Image (cartoon, rainbow over all chains, first blue to last red; front, side, top):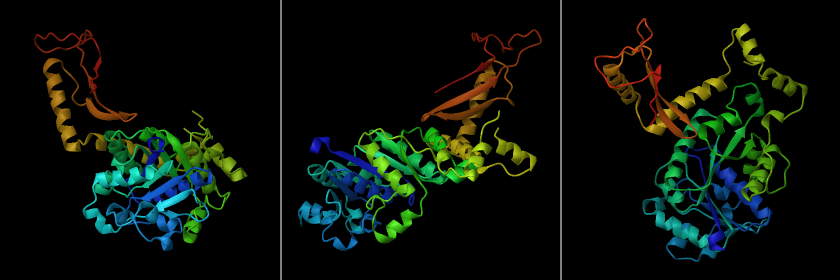
Amino acid sequence: MSTNTRTILICSGKGGVGKTTLTANLGIALAKQGVKTAVLDADFGLRNLDLLLGLENRIVYTAQEVLEESCRLDQALVKHKQEPNLALLPAGNPRMLDWLKPEDMQRIVKMLSDQFEYVLIDCPAGVEDGFKNAVSASKEAIVVTNPEVSAVRDADRVIGLLNTHSINPVQLVLNRVRPNMIANQEMLSVDDVTDILALPLLGLVLEDEQVIVSTNRGEPLTLSGSKSPAARCYSNIASRLKGEDIPLIDPSKEGSRIRDKFKRLMQTKIF
Amino acid sequence: MTLRDILNKLLRRQEASANTARERLQLVLAHDRTDLSPDLLDQMRREILEVVAKYVEIDIEEGAVSLETEDRMTALVANLPIRRDPSGAIKTKELTTIDSSEEQTQTNN
């Protein structure tokens, strides 16, 4: 399994754009589709993946003990009860950052690759050592960004760095898209962002209050088979990642009420 | 121009912010991607103009050197209008071997 394993870094540069939420939802969605998936929390400083997956109380060992060889990998892996195809390798103590090297990260990911088909690596924000360690252990990357100037600028910086590390492919996920604001031309459109960053779009995620509800519960939206906008988007992204041909959601087609139709009329190009 | 733009103009409302965001981003990214500070770019612009002005008479005021980015490739684009004398010929300085019939010179890197 090792050589075919896809090790995918989920990164963004800027914090708070939705890396961890995407990792959790993608992990569950892939597992649901029958793919043996590991999610690795590489954000040792500010770990949260366990919380979003609702696994925070089941952690016994972490990546740290695995690296120190004081436990076996399968002792540290936390299997998801409802989706046994998914396992989390929790981040170790923040003090690990003092000694963690790219080789350590590569060693951990290699171990995971022997057991899983997909390894999703939740990258820390920033472009410092934590990021570099995580990049060194990845073959592919998903860059998450929001349609906001600061997030796009930081994404651009990260894409530049990924290119120097021969990560391929690098794909884009545009998170927290608000069709209403795009219709009002008060938000960068999907095309604006893909043009500026010049990356293939793996998918977009519509802004959705249910995301907060699901994180409150520690149950990713994709777990319950919810039909909420973001849940659909996450599932589509998982399918596309596997190579399925799923058409992108067109934000301008979201909403069919008269008000939405009027807004579309207002942005029709006349000349 | 969209219906909304026209309405905004008529009502003298502020332009929708997405355009502003796009323009600001394109500018800041062009600089980020090259790691050139605005000061350095300005100095380079002046030196390029000086070199070209040694050979042909150019309109220094109209000359522009900028960074343009497309598909993650950044190009340094110099747009230097060359002055013509009343007969329409290009005004060259002294004896030069430069033979350019183009109105504008473009340099890409």
